[in-house]
Length: 310
Image (cartoon, rainbow, N blue to C red; front, side, top):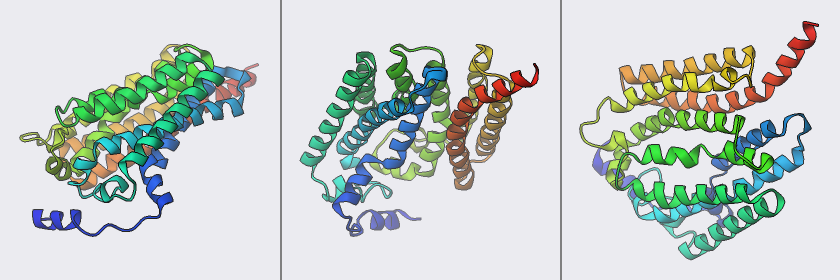
């Protein structure tokens, strides 16, 4: 696609959204659902056998509300660069469908509701960590995208926080599975976002954002780094088993998922192409819900195995 064609797409008349649809774009429901799910799993693993599912769902909702606010504030700060990118040029804050003032109010109300809900219904530490996660994402990661390609590493920290936040909301302190899931999600993000950044590298370059694949003389680096991080994810994903918190079933399935991620990343490293980058993204989107679901199934499998051995 030529630069002239790209400009034509960016400047094309926006598709009119209803106000509800516009706010749906701002709060990114699919990402919010993933945040809520990760927080729920973290809380459930902190609860053990005495889990209060309604309480866990409530904590996930409060955390998800702050996640929504983060998405709104991120788009608010990036509306100038979004206007220069094909895939984001029709976002509601760019087109004016939602006014900046309304977005500020909406993000603020969601933040206050989520933080107060966690503080009053769960504990102060969970509330403060959730607020700090949003601040790091909005005020550190978002502006850093204009300055340095290190933004991906910095952004991976708040991006990995949801399961730890859910764990802290229930346990009142960080530990065990909360840290394991944080570490897994931290390493998982690099191949995922490097592949996405490679696909949209022209967009990022046009907007002046310092994503690695969009920078000069970086051919091949996105694929190589994706492979390195996918390899690092293998031992990280086995930490629960090494600590005695997971069994053989977890090890086998975690390794299977991890090797699939390595294979996709290796293919991308051998030859960077849109198709291979998309494969990395697809495998990554399967990896997280599958692995997190696995952490919930493993205790049941171990319990069945223990009964069978009696």
